[in-house]
Length: 118
Image 1 (tube, helix red, strand yellow):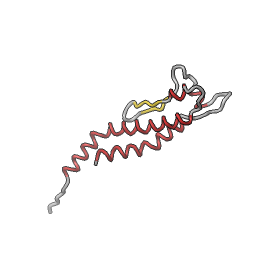
Image 2: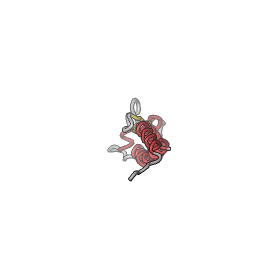
Image 3: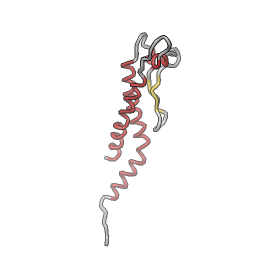
Image 4: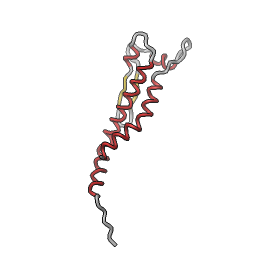
């Protein structure tokens, strides 16, 4: 009995592209998802001077890791706004941004993988 498979070269080529492209696709999806999280955080953060809002950004460290970041430098109160203090209750802005990132990441990764195999 002989079995013939057609399209084998195409499958192998697609798998190679997928294998080589996954790290970059993952990083792109992470970057795009984090940007959406930053947008959400900037929309809902309490604004007095705008310094905290301007400090919100994202960092992609690798294909597997990225963070939403706020504060630093003169904006040393970012944690107090997010988690509250004895005087003032929490006003979360990074957590909702992170939730958007977590929700969007699988969708964005799927889009990037589809680009690789099409």
